[in-house]
Image (cartoon, rainbow, N blue to C red; front, side, top):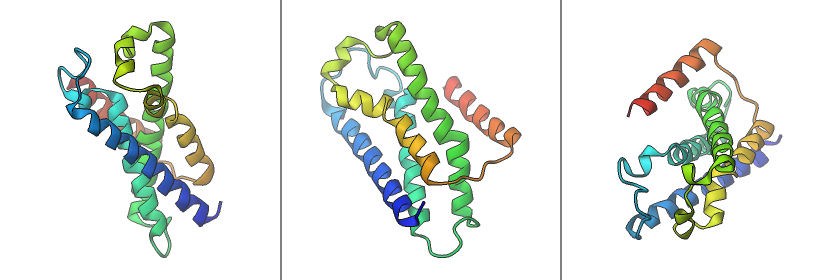
Length: 166
């Protein structure tokens, strides 16, 4: 894949996630359905954290694309590959698959009907559907260097336990 196409893809994905996060932030003063942000605000939701993770990853990928010289050997490139392979892809895939599996079983468990008036359907899909196709597009446009399995699982496990404990 040419570097221009890759750069446009990363900038577009970053812009998409920045747009979604901004829209979520703009809802801060609106009347919320009862119980939605009682403890921890949006930070308690893996969906919100995943959006920030995806935005961060694609932002770093766009910055890496703008770097002159040997990108594959740079510290930024190695960190970007680590972030994608250990966090962005697994967490993004997990959020999409788990959300829709639970939604199909009992919608009220993850996305009560009362939220439909607060989050329009397009935003629901932006947070819970489009993440996976964007990640799969990343797999197609950018080869990644993957860390050792034990290091990746250790890092993912530590972050997962930290999330569950809070």
